[in-house]
Image (cartoon, rainbow, N blue to C red; front, top):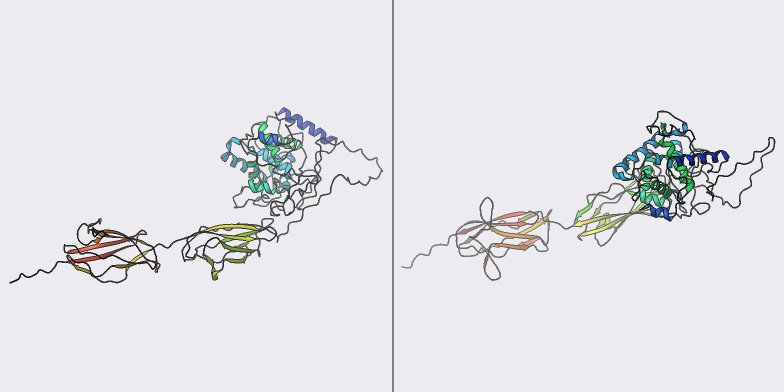
Amino acid sequence: MAAQFGHRLRRGATTAAVAAAAVAALSASQAPAAPQADGGAGDRAAAGATPSDEAATGNSPYHTDLPPLATPNKPGASVNLPVTGSAEAGIPASVLAAYKKAEQELAGTDAACRLPWQLLAAIGKVESGQARGGKVDANGTTLSPILGPALNGQGFALIKDTDGGAYDSDATHDRAVGPMQFIPSTWATWGQDGNGDGRKDPNNIYDAALAAGRYLCAGTRDLSLATDLDRAVLSYNHSTEYLRTVRSWFEYYKRGTHEVPDGTGVLPAGSSGGSSSSPTPTPSPSTNSPSPSPSPTPPGTPSPTPTPDPSVPPTTPPPTPRPDVFGSLENAGTGTLQATAGEEFDRRIAVRARNTQGALLAKVQVTFTVVGDTDARFAGGRTTATVATAADGTASAPALTAGEKTGSFKVTAVAGTTKPRTLTYTASVTARVADTLTRTDGKAMTATAGDAFADRVTVTTTYKGTGVAGTAVTATMITDAETPAENDKGPYFTDADGKAVRTLDLTTGDDGLLQLPEIKAGDTAGTYKLRLTTASGATLTVELKVEAAAETAPEA
């Protein structure tokens, strides 16, 4: 959840009155004045397929400001966006666009959920004050990370680090991240690319809004039903107070809102809206009841120095992210890795490194390693190679050459030391396939009818000039028709029983050479054809000439 920039709901009699009015308004709008529970296991089970065993935000603190009692339009008025309105009703342009885009995406992929963008707006308001009043760049990424307090069990949930600090710059405990305040473990499952830039960044309002929408729509929820909507919100944060606050803003935005320029949104009370990663939070109170207003100090009486509450453990503000700290490693467009035995792969493995804030990072050492049962090697016969990323954050492995062993193997790319990031690629080597079939000599094949050809036909199968062993070759005596068929006249081979056959299936030796068996001429003179083919389509035709036997002169 959002870091608690200001006070929680306990802010005196005025806030208590607003809260009471808000609850009354919710009751009038058929929203439950009190939810079933504080988001326990019963709520999660009743929701069908809930997103996770823990709240999306880790139950971090959140803004508790309630909307004004004067709503943008009267109850029952049109929900079309007014051009102008109260300052509180304004939503920064990019933030509003992200909520509406997420609603449209879910309408196309999960129409049964009926996600209203106003619910995302309500959660975004409570979580981060609409991304700190819309302080985002042109792509929708916050100008500085929005980080909640360390979830170290001191006033908050205890969630030990799950991302090595990649998202929250904290390698000890997790923190809620971004305008929708996802904890890293939840983002790992539900993160989305809402703006189509190829990244899933919790600090981007388009990515975060779409992820929040999918999270709220988990299972078979229909958010047009009050009970399903309540369960969805409670799955985001297990708190009755949180549900009431989100519900208040939801009803407020449903009555109308308007777009304001980025960076000009109204910040929650007590929020500086500054560029710090996360203000120091106040631990969540153990009760949802409003606190009484402090007694006014008589004029002229010096204010007493506040005494620290020993029951409230101190919290440590999150560290400022360093731009040179390695955060993540991603594929930089490596395609299919496939090569023929003995040849160089036509693609190189490429990766991209980013820092903890998602920016491209140079000078990161990436080690590429060939693993598995293979004789493929990098240049120089090496199985490992280390390359530093360039200014654009990318690094490419050296050229990889396939060996003679066919089949699949793996190549890993590893970067980082404290908690390494690893990418694994699958590469495959295929056997050579003969592309050429030739005779080893050009001798004319001539025989006399009734005899055998004195010479044997010898051929070789090659791939790019190299002999290919084990190539299947079919030898057939063919007719001379436009569509050749097996010829039942003229030359023939003999099988093991001495019977005439005119088609043989043969295989080349280790060097790609093949010598055909002896060919009988047959009894009919003429010119015949022997056709040799391989499975890859290589073809060779050999002419066989049979001459008539010389006539024997009769004895005198």
